[in-house]
Image (cartoon, rainbow, N blue to C red):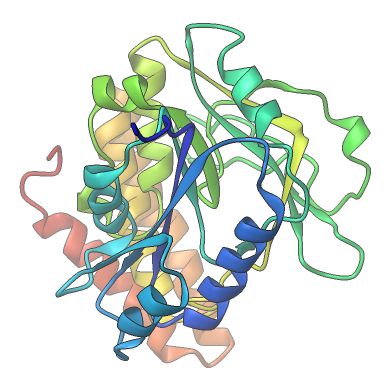
Length: 299
């Protein structure tokens, strides 16, 4: 008997977050019934060997154990190597599924051959279920500032399905053929900004990206890294510069990098000093140093 085709490959990355990963898997298994799917967990060299017991607890789940931490992009790329679905859904392990509305995402994807990917509406796991994301505004050319549409509100009906410049890294569903045309996630970022860079690459290929609010997921947010950590400060400072280098050209690129080096990062350092967070300030400066050393920056 031939295996039935798989609609969606759900890929999630775990790094020392097995409690969140188990809750995520349980929510998928409990609620997703309208589509055929496979679950792929990529463990980024967590400090425990729980990946082995996970395979026993969830025999239907494909578990990949990396020998070293490959970062968000590198781990997702490992998951893509074994994914068999027509669509690839990248979901953070700190997300939860409450309703089976995945068909709405597929319907949106198939509504136009130029649509490469779609994100659902994302809500916070707090008691009010406030919205985290209903699309993004474009990054400004030089300062690289933007905002999440709908953030802090609760009424999803105020936000229709529409094109968005970037998908949300916590939940991105792509057509397989679009990814194969654009190539894998850019591993040079390791953590933060890789999804923005990837989405920008897809836009340059002529693809569009959409938000589909008729599908919703919950997102805990910052479960792995934490809201304030030197690691986060390092990669945010480093990768903002890297994004500007890779996605801006000519004078705009020069101005953007100068702004980030001479204004944005010093302001972040000053804030950290005022809060007596010396480690955060040092991390921002290390991020600049690491960006300068990166060769090649376009790989």
